[in-house]
Image 1 (cartoon, rainbow, N blue to C red):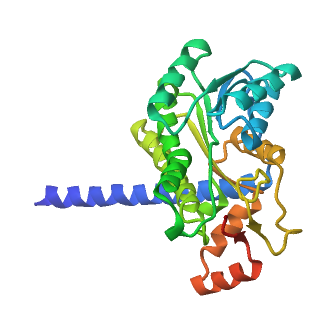
Image 2: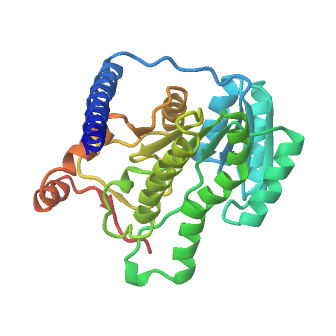
Length: 311
């Protein structure tokens, strides 16, 4: 009887110690987070890394390829459009930026992703930084969406992340070295009218990145050195949004693909887990998520940010 009581007391003391230790760790990481908000994080070098970028033939993807090549990385351009993808590669070669390769690949096709990934592995090496940038979208009422259009957006925007992760993550895990970057959207935090498919895929990307990061943390018992960065751009002038509607254009002006790519590379090099573009929108989105839904709708209607239905 006494032994049982002593055992319970001992277990209770251990639990109390665990709780106190947990509180200390929470406070530490809380203040660490505040500290990094004011002290610039050192950007780590990407020289010598093998960076694969999906949808590299134009827009943000092309600028990402140029940016990483300028920093001394070996760049691999993937795109379904072979001609424009090779144009990106040739432009980088003409700049004398460094080693660059181009491969035609439909990232929505799992078999093709694995086939081309194996070719990359043999001809270039193991990818150490994967940038899942491919994305398409349209603004249309849900009931007017065709099955083919819905499937295409989900395949490119979301399923492609699963296929590239399955293709390239194993080698990163084996070497305990790598970085996954996913280009989502600020639409991940707020579903908007006529964006029922696009917003859903971008929100799912955020959940996927959180889940796979936690999965590696648990399976490795906290020893995984693989990093994950999800970026949430606002309005980028790439043409994907055909009919943008913006009341205060001077305040919420769009960024060029070059500006966006530079900020994405910075977010990866500084190991941000999540980063909006521009950076302040992530904090604003989280704060707006705390207010009542009707109040949020009033603010949203006042700003009048969205997209009109495409023809």
